Image 1 (cartoon, helix red, strand yellow):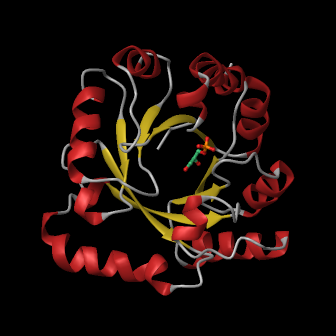
Image 2 (tube, rainbow, N blue to C red; image 1 turned 90 degrees about the vertical axis):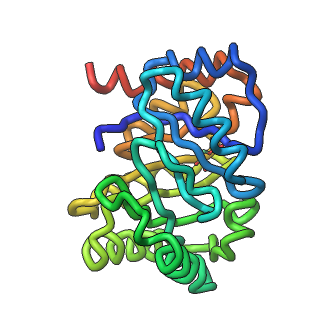
Length: 227
Ligand code: 1GP
């Protein structure tokens, strides 16, 4: 997918119409809808219907199968590679497919291999991730996902904290086919530039709710690289 920049919106957090208008008209490549807690069918439908007033592609990251709302352009299914609980790698996904598999639009459903590296983040706690990893461990997880599992996406997740860009670059250098997504702690244009130079796709989340104008500037970072 040719996404270089994505804004991530959490259905469990409120966003004004005015802010949503700026986000959807910002030139970002897609809006990613997802969150680590409190995501329900109702709040996901509500957010989707508001984003659908715009042309920007809309992608759902399905962390709760009960909130798998129809009508998105693409669906990303997280599989947490560095979890200590197989439920987060394959268990929840298996149960969801058992229940909803016949209804899934498979041609627009993709797996994302998550490597969660900020141990303080809700995502790490919820998914029981072992975030304390050496660079060689992270690269090995990425290679398992890329080479063995042939996942289309690998997501290096530092949610709430700006990560180690050298590590992100080291991972990207080793990838054969997977698209590398980076998300976590991007709060200004300079960080967005660094992340965009290190990963294939950058995701900007929290700052949308705290400093919208700063967040909107991050779209420029990927445009500069493309020009
Ligand atoms: C969260 O990776 C995204 O899943 C973005 O992180 O909210 O820290 O920008 P932030």
